[in-house]
Length: 146
Image (cartoon, rainbow, N blue to C red; front, side, top):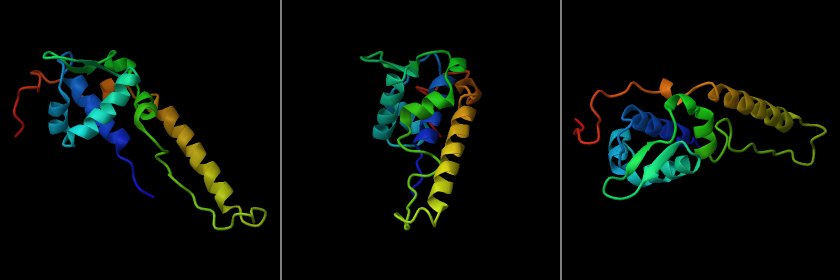
Protein backbone atom coordinates (compact mmCIF):
# COMPACT_ATOMS: atom_id res chain seq x y z
CA UNK A 1 0.00 0.00 0.00
CA UNK A 2 1.51 3.33 -1.02
CA UNK A 3 0.95 6.38 1.11
CA UNK A 4 -0.59 9.44 -0.47
CA UNK A 5 0.63 12.87 0.60
CA UNK A 6 -1.91 14.83 -1.45
CA UNK A 7 -4.07 15.92 1.50
CA UNK A 8 -1.07 16.90 3.63
CA UNK A 9 0.61 18.82 0.78
CA UNK A 10 -2.66 20.57 -0.12
CA UNK A 11 -3.10 21.51 3.54
CA UNK A 12 0.40 23.05 3.62
CA UNK A 13 -0.41 24.97 0.44
CA UNK A 14 -3.70 26.18 1.90
CA UNK A 15 -2.02 27.17 5.15
CA UNK A 16 0.68 29.20 3.39
CA UNK A 17 -1.81 30.98 1.13
CA UNK A 18 -4.07 31.73 4.11
CA UNK A 19 -1.19 32.98 6.27
CA UNK A 20 -0.31 35.47 3.51
CA UNK A 21 -3.88 36.59 2.79
CA UNK A 22 -4.98 38.80 1.18
CA UNK A 23 -1.75 38.91 -0.84
CA UNK A 24 -1.80 36.92 -4.09
CA UNK A 25 0.94 34.30 -4.27
CA UNK A 26 2.52 32.67 -7.31
CA UNK A 27 2.76 28.88 -7.42
CA UNK A 28 6.55 29.13 -7.64
CA UNK A 29 6.63 30.99 -4.33
CA UNK A 30 4.29 28.48 -2.73
CA UNK A 31 6.38 25.58 -4.03
CA UNK A 32 9.55 27.10 -2.58
CA UNK A 33 8.02 27.54 0.88
CA UNK A 34 6.16 24.23 0.91
CA UNK A 35 9.31 22.52 -0.43
CA UNK A 36 7.68 20.67 -3.28
CA UNK A 37 7.85 20.81 -7.07
CA UNK A 38 5.93 23.68 -8.73
CA UNK A 39 4.15 21.20 -11.02
CA UNK A 40 2.76 19.36 -7.98
CA UNK A 41 1.65 22.67 -6.48
CA UNK A 42 -0.08 23.68 -9.73
CA UNK A 43 -1.85 20.33 -9.90
CA UNK A 44 -3.18 20.53 -6.34
CA UNK A 45 -3.98 24.25 -6.64
CA UNK A 46 -5.99 23.56 -9.79
CA UNK A 47 -8.14 21.08 -7.89
CA UNK A 48 -8.62 23.49 -5.00
CA UNK A 49 -9.59 26.31 -7.40
CA UNK A 50 -12.23 24.03 -8.97
CA UNK A 51 -13.54 23.27 -5.46
CA UNK A 52 -13.81 27.00 -4.61
CA UNK A 53 -11.15 26.76 -1.90
CA UNK A 54 -8.61 28.96 -3.66
CA UNK A 55 -9.09 31.72 -6.20
CA UNK A 56 -6.70 32.26 -9.09
CA UNK A 57 -5.92 35.43 -11.05
CA UNK A 58 -3.91 35.55 -14.28
CA UNK A 59 -1.51 38.20 -15.45
CA UNK A 60 1.28 40.33 -14.03
CA UNK A 61 -0.63 40.90 -10.79
CA UNK A 62 -2.05 37.40 -10.73
CA UNK A 63 -1.65 34.70 -8.17
CA UNK A 64 -3.63 32.76 -5.63
CA UNK A 65 -5.65 33.74 -2.60
CA UNK A 66 -8.37 32.12 -0.56
CA UNK A 67 -11.71 31.92 -2.34
CA UNK A 68 -13.52 32.30 0.99
CA UNK A 69 -12.63 33.15 4.57
CA UNK A 70 -10.35 30.53 6.13
CA UNK A 71 -12.95 29.89 8.83
CA UNK A 72 -15.37 28.73 6.09
CA UNK A 73 -13.01 26.17 4.50
CA UNK A 74 -12.88 22.68 6.04
CA UNK A 75 -10.28 19.99 5.62
CA UNK A 76 -13.06 17.71 4.37
CA UNK A 77 -13.45 20.06 1.39
CA UNK A 78 -9.71 19.89 0.77
CA UNK A 79 -9.80 16.10 1.11
CA UNK A 80 -12.71 15.83 -1.33
CA UNK A 81 -10.95 18.14 -3.79
CA UNK A 82 -7.51 16.52 -3.89
CA UNK A 83 -7.59 12.97 -2.55
CA UNK A 84 -7.79 10.30 -5.24
CA UNK A 85 -8.12 7.33 -2.92
CA UNK A 86 -8.93 6.57 0.69
CA UNK A 87 -6.32 7.54 3.25
CA UNK A 88 -7.08 4.34 5.15
CA UNK A 89 -6.35 1.73 2.49
CA UNK A 90 -5.88 1.87 -1.25
CA UNK A 91 -6.53 -1.80 -1.89
CA UNK A 92 -7.47 -4.90 0.03
CA UNK A 93 -6.57 -8.13 -1.72
CA UNK A 94 -8.79 -11.17 -1.28
CA UNK A 95 -6.82 -14.37 -1.90
CA UNK A 96 -9.92 -16.40 -1.02
CA UNK A 97 -12.22 -14.90 -3.65
CA UNK A 98 -15.03 -17.36 -4.31
CA UNK A 99 -14.83 -18.80 -0.79
CA UNK A 100 -16.43 -15.88 1.09
CA UNK A 101 -18.67 -18.26 3.05
CA UNK A 102 -15.52 -19.63 4.76
CA UNK A 103 -13.24 -16.59 4.99
CA UNK A 104 -14.64 -13.31 6.29
CA UNK A 105 -11.34 -11.38 6.54
CA UNK A 106 -11.98 -9.37 3.36
CA UNK A 107 -15.54 -8.44 4.41
CA UNK A 108 -14.51 -7.48 7.95
CA UNK A 109 -11.66 -5.23 6.83
CA UNK A 110 -13.66 -3.70 3.98
CA UNK A 111 -16.38 -2.67 6.47
CA UNK A 112 -13.80 -1.49 9.02
CA UNK A 113 -11.95 0.70 6.50
CA UNK A 114 -15.25 2.14 5.25
CA UNK A 115 -16.24 3.02 8.82
CA UNK A 116 -12.84 4.58 9.55
CA UNK A 117 -13.04 6.59 6.34
CA UNK A 118 -16.54 7.85 7.19
CA UNK A 119 -15.45 8.86 10.71
CA UNK A 120 -12.33 10.57 9.39
CA UNK A 121 -14.43 12.58 6.90
CA UNK A 122 -16.69 13.69 9.77
CA UNK A 123 -13.67 14.78 11.79
CA UNK A 124 -12.13 16.61 8.80
CA UNK A 125 -15.38 18.54 8.51
CA UNK A 126 -14.81 20.04 11.98
CA UNK A 127 -11.33 21.39 11.19
CA UNK A 128 -11.26 24.73 9.39
CA UNK A 129 -8.39 26.31 7.49
CA UNK A 130 -8.00 29.07 10.08
CA UNK A 131 -6.80 26.40 12.52
CA UNK A 132 -3.85 25.60 10.23
CA UNK A 133 -1.89 28.86 10.36
CA UNK A 134 -0.87 32.03 12.11
CA UNK A 135 -0.87 34.98 9.72
CA UNK A 136 2.47 36.50 8.74
CA UNK A 137 2.94 40.11 9.79
CA UNK A 138 4.73 40.74 6.51
CA UNK A 139 3.66 38.76 3.40
CA UNK A 140 6.23 36.17 2.36
CA UNK A 141 6.02 36.60 -1.44
CA UNK A 142 9.21 38.67 -1.67
CA UNK A 143 10.98 37.54 1.49
CA UNK A 144 13.89 35.21 0.76
CA UNK A 145 13.78 31.81 2.35
CA UNK A 146 16.72 31.08 4.67
